[in-house]
Structures are given as structure tokens and as C-alpha cells.
Amino acid sequence: MTALATAPIHRIATTARIHAANPWTILYTPWLILFGVFALNFAIWHAVLIGAGDRPLAPDAFTTNGGVTYIFVYMVVVAVQAMNQTFSFVVGLGATRRDYFGGTVLVFGALSVVFGVGISLLAWVERATDGWGVRGAFFAPGPLRTEPIWVLAVMYTLLLLLMFFVGSAVAATFVRWGANGIIIFFGALALLIVGVVYAITVNGGWEAVGRFFTTHSMLGLAAYTIPVTLVGGLAGFLLMSRATPKG
Amino acid sequence: MTAVIEVTDLARTYGKVAAVADVSFSIEENSICGLLGRNGAGKTTLMRLVTGQEFASAGEIRVFGEDPVENAGVLARTCFVRESQVYPDGFRGKHVLKAAAQLFPNWDADYAARLVAEFRVPLDRRMKKMSRGQRSSVGVIIGLASRADLTLLDEPYAGLDAVARELFYDHLLKDYSENPRTIVLSTHLIDEAARLLEHVLVVDNGSLLMDAAADDLRGTAVTLVGGHNAVERFASGRPVLGWESIGGISSVTLTGLSDADKADAAAAGLELAPVSLQQLIVSRTRSAQEARS
Image (cartoon, rainbow over all chains, first blue to last red; front, side, top):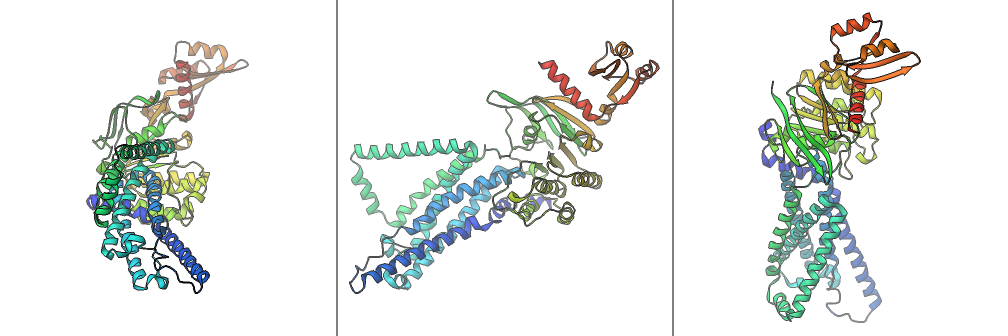
């Protein structure tokens, strides 16, 4: 019994189950909000159609939409919130930080697949119904309209993984150094971004940057997130491995 | 006898503040040890260090012979319950017990259910909405039902009423005799818990002040009451822990009296009164403080 209970897989699964004990934050709420955002967009499309009356609309009038990006921002918040709350509880009750992180990674991975595949299936419905009957594009807007569904699934899953793992680094920063840590973290991030933008401009590199985005496929671009995701996860793990539970 | 906890020259500093300084002790297997001291003395930090939740600045900790930090084998046999345990938002009592059932290999679900009924814990209530006593009850239930080889209870019954506290003492003693394990209990209610304790560690200002068997301590100090002159004559040259005078009557608390000394005191017309563990620790802590300042 003890041997089973202390097997690494069991210990990691324990953390995963504790994350899932209250599925609202990580599972139900994000879907509800996503459907809510979609419903609002759908209502706006209809209002525009009614307002337009007999006047013809451009065929791509409802295809530029950023509503689905909400889910990516939300998942960073979920990562920070879930880790901040469960770390002190799980490690406080006697789990190792390693097992805690393993279970958390498992949950983040599963959520990325569930949301990535789920959104792609909704994109498939969107295409099958001629854009929800109004030629709208919400789940695969703009340039994504022509991508195969499986490409959407891989791309969304990779992007969500990026959000979760960068989120885990932000969460670890918060768990270890509190609000001050977050201020310094985002201050440093802002400096880095401005520095990169400055360097690109000074060296006249924007054309090359544009070429990078136009010559790579969606899949290729999504693949570039993998190293960043790994670095984020590693940073989260290293920071977490020296964190102490609150209370 | 095997030591479950062995601490050598342990220190934990936060900036310039020494929360724990140069502490060494060991705790034997299958005993109940009281970890006593004032607020901020370093009790919680010590327990967090022993359970690998805090990192030592210096010194060595061995739990079941191994370093507890990130040691899944050691931590699975260890249960640490504290008053200030943090619970995730939205977690209800039942979620907490479910998590505990998964984390502790020896968890006894039937026993936990019986304790829930006896302590009257509203399992469907969110932890945040529970009263302090109800939250403490959840902690106490985890501490008992986890049946961990090493159980550390940090102020486990803050906010509990007298009935619930008695219930806890009774359960602890009964379950301890049926399922022997090593228990470390920190508390402010020393006299209440005194009957449970086999060993006592007293910390003050981050240092270890006392490390003794409870039975030895109980016999070490006596209060003598009598006429001022008689008391002064007897006490001179002996280690005095406390002194009080009202009118011509004085009372003095002394340590290290042999049976012969006690007979002498009685012959000198002095009245002997036993000193409770709590009084002893209070006066020891005070005299340590006076010695420092």
C-alpha cells in the first residue's frame, strides 16, 4: 500500500486531482466566458445585418475577429491563480515541490489539449454552417480561415502551452517574491521588449521580421513557441523548487 | 530507542533576524513531544524546517535518518498540520479531506468520518466561510486520520471550545496508544496539554531553552511558602526561579531540590507546593529573558 502510494506517478496524479477538485476556475469558467464572448459577437453580426437591410455587405465583413484571443490571456491568469493557491496547500500538506510541479504540468498539458482541440472543433462547425449562417469567423478568424482543422488544433494547443508555461514562471515569481516580484518581472519584460524593438529599428530589421512571418506557415510559426514554452517551464520549475508555502 | 528527528546546529535567518539559532535536539520514536514557547519564539519555523517546507541557513536535519527537503519518502510518512494552513479558494471541507486521503498513505477514511461527526465539521462549507474553530477541527482530523509515522501539530486547536479540546486530547491519547507514532505538538495551553506530553522542548528567541522528559521537569521545581526570614534563609545560595512577597509572607520557586532538601524545608516550617509545567516554563522563560537584558 505504501509502495503504491509513494510511487511517483501516484504522487503526481494526486496534485493533478487537487487542481481538478474544483473544476470551475480551470475548466467551466473559461468555456462559459468564451461562449459568452461568441454570443455577443453573434448578436453584433445580426444587428449589423439588420441595420444594413438590403444593402450588400462585403463577403469578409465578419471574418476579422479577436474574440478567441481572450482564452490565451485567461490561461495565463489561470496558471498564476491555480499555482498560487494550490502550491501552499499541497506542499503545506507534505508533497514535494517536484511532485507538485509534475502534477501541475500534467494538468496544464491536459487543459491545453482540451481547449486547443475544442476550439478547433468549434472552428469546424463554424465552417460547416457557413460561418454560423452569417459568414462569420470567430473560432478561426482572418488568415486562419484557410488552415486545415488539424493545423488549428496543433497551433492552438501549442499557443495554450506557451501561455500556461510562461504563466507558471510568472506564478512562481509571485509565490516566491509576492507583488514586488511581479512588478520587477514585468518591468524587466517591458525593458526587454522595448530593447528588442529598438535594436530591430536601429538595424533596419523590420523587413526581415515581416519576411519571417510571411514566409513561415502557421504551423512553422507555432513551432517557434516550443523553445519559449520550454524555457518558461524550466524557469517556473527552478523558481518553484526554492519556494516556501505560505502560512 | 531510535531518533525520528535529529537536528544539529540548526539555524534559519531572514536577513538579520535569526528565527532559529544554533538549535540541536532529537526526538525519539513513538513519543509525544511538546514544542513550547512564546509567540514568535521560532516554533513554527522549526516545524517548517523539519518538514522541508523551509530551507535551513545552517546546520543539519535528519528525519527518519534522511534529509527531509524534497524527500518524497520522508514526507509521505510525515503529516504537518498548522493553524495557518492555506486552502485554495472555493475549497470546501470535503475537498480538503479528499486531498488529504490521497496524500497520506495510511489515511483511515472511517476514522476521519467518525471524527467529522464528533467535531461537528460542516464539510459542505467553504473553508473560507468556516469559523476558526471549525477550520482547526479540519486540521485536527487530518492530523489524527493521516496516521503518519511523524505527526506535527502546530497550535492545532486555536479557536476550539473546551469540549472540542477535550475531545482532541482524548482521541490523540487513544489513537496514539492503538497506533503508536511520533507526535510533536506546539501549544500555548501548556497545563491542558501537560498530561499528554512525555518530552518537552522549550524555545525562546530562536534558541532551545529546555530539552527534558516531562516527568523530570515536573519534579524539579517547588514553591516554598512561609515567613519571609525562613524563606530567605532556605533559598540563599540556591537557584531561584521566582520570588513573591506579601506582608511578612514570601513564596519562592526553586529548582534542583532533592528529597532531603524538601524534608529540610518542611522541618523549617515552610509549606511545599508543586509547580505546574506551565508555571515552570513561564518562570524559566522569564529568567532567561532577564539574563539576556
